[in-house]
Image (cartoon, rainbow, N blue to C red; front, side, top):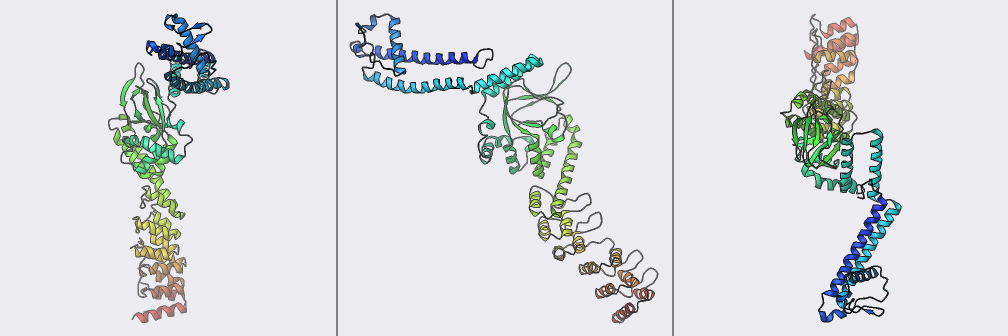
Length: 533
């Protein structure tokens, strides 16, 4: 009656309090009379009613007094005792009555506190029930103003009734508890449920722990629609208790698809694939659901890449008989590919910026250190080009390929050599890295032409053959002699360049020096030819 907005709340509360008080007083009066009537007949004069005297009237033979007078007398004793007035005209006269009065007065203190507390709540209007009534009254006004149908209004009212009665959910009770304690409570309550959900099969314990901390408990009554077919979904639900059904809305009737039992999950297809909800999900019996919003789920999936792929694979495997899921197979495959590409970019970005901590987090979460980006470059390419020795060492320890070649033909060792990072180049060489130049002759000729003497020295130190030839069978020594580059010629000769090598026109580096007209260069090459002879 208190929750019925058609009745005055103040009136119903006062009636309730009066009823409680009268019931307690009546019970006490009956117990007082019982104590007086259960003693032997010879001792009934030594009871509170047997020894009672009201003026000249005595109750020594109270059995002869009419029942109404006896009841009123007992009620009078109960009220006087409860209010602790004590006029002295009526009192306990034996041990049993004394003991009962002590217990009764102790109970009356509790009853009085209850009555006063409720009266205070009526005055300040802060009770939970009154807030519920106010909310329900506003809801009725809203439905009447917008002329909502009876069916919708009935569902809304039932839902509010349910949430008013079940007010001990995790969100309402634990909102002021520290997050670390809430996480432990969530693990205790929900981990066993989440671990049995088919979508999360094979996922790591850390991933599941993150999932349980984001769950919110909700209750739904039979007939309530949780997700509507064709709607945009931003929530995922796990069934903890109860049963639901998936149906397709038809013109005349609904087509039953599947029954959702404990440890089932729904809404995941729409959230993960970003599509409208394929089915309507309706409650068949009172159920307890665990809800997680889309943003929380996607953020966790972005952190745990290996588990994210496992979840998508489980989504494909879990509903092999579902035609709609089969139709989405290409979309889910695209999501997997997209995640892997984004992951490779994240790993490469961390390696490029020297963020070892973030790189470790990504790889520990399941990232592949050998994954290439759109240019075929790996994280080892990026780190070697920037000279980050600690990152290069970490990537090698995690199995990165030291001889991986990108789309431009560059290896990590070549990146380190070109960037003048000698310590990184030495580290890579010790781990078996090679320059792996596709056309070493052409590459050396270009380096000589560009005048990159330091780079030339690094290439030769790292094993590039100075006698490598280009498409015209010309070596880098031919080019250096033709350009009159004395320093480059000396370096190439020092690393074993052949002064007798001929190009496709039969010219040697010495012939090129004669055309150049540099007498010092001619003397260098003549001396080198004599030394070789």
